[in-house]
Image 1 (cartoon, rainbow, N blue to C red):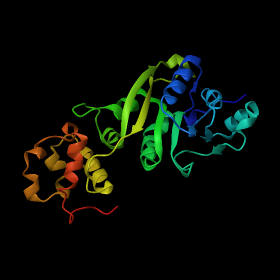
Image 2 (cartoon, rainbow, N blue to C red):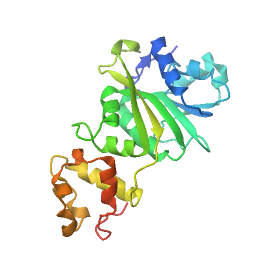
Image 3 (cartoon, rainbow, N blue to C red):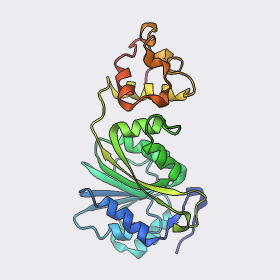
Image 4 (cartoon, rainbow, N blue to C red):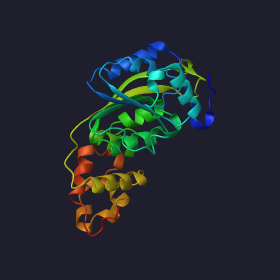
Amino acid sequence: MYRLKKSLGQHFLRDENISKKIVSALRERPFCRLLEVGPGGGALTKYLMQLEGVEFLAVEPDAEKIRHLEDTWPALRGKIHEGSILDMEKPFHGPFTVIGNFPYNISSQILFRMLEWKADLQAVVGMFQKEVALRAAAKEGSKIYGVLSVLIQAFFTVEYLFEVGESSFTPPPKVRSAVIRLTPVSPPSFRDERAFFQVVKTAFNQRRKTLRNAVRPLFDAETLRDPLFDRRAEQLTITEFAGLTWRMSTTLLQPT
C-alpha cells in the first residue's frame, strides 16, 4: 500500500460520509476542469474520477502515493503532477475549480496561491485546519480577522460549510478540521491591487496599534487626521481598506 509521511503533514481521510459531503459541495456549482490537491490515498479521487465531462488533474508531492493511485486507478496515469501546488504552474488554460484535503502545514500558503490564480478560479472546495478556515471566514471586529480574511474575502465569498472530527482521519490529527468553499466575487473598488495588498498587510503588521500609527508611512499628515485612523485594523471592513488605497500618497508607496 503506502506509508504515512509526517514530514508532508499527511492525515488521510477515511470517513466515506465526509468524502461524499465534500464532493457534494463541489458539485453544487458547474465546472469542467478540476484540480485535486494532495489526493493521498484517494479518498476523494475515487469519487472525482466518476464525474462525467470533467477534465481532471491532481498534484501530489509524494511519489509513493502517486504509484499507489496509478496502480489502483490506471486511468489516473498521466494526470498526476508530482510536486507541490506552491511550485506548480497554473494547471489549465481557462476557468477551473480546485478541491482538496489540504495539507495543514501549508494551508495558509495554499489560500494565497488561490489568490494568484483568482482570475481563472470558478470555485475552491476544501478541508483546512479549523483555525485557518475560521480565519478565512472571519468578519471585521473579530480577533481572528486579519490579512488572510481581508485578502481572501475581497475576491471570494467564503462559506464555512461543516466541521470534521479528528476520528475521520488516519492518523487522527491533533486539531479539528473544517470544509470551506470559495466562490469568486467582484472585488471592491481600489486604486490597484498592489496598493490594496500593501495597505492591508501594513495595517495588520501592527494590529494592536491604531491605524494611524500602523500605516503612517503610507499617508500624508493631512489624510492621517481623519477619525477613521483612530480605529484598529481589525475594525475596518474590506470596502474601507479598499477606499484607503485611493488616499495613499503616491510618493510614499513602496515598490513591489
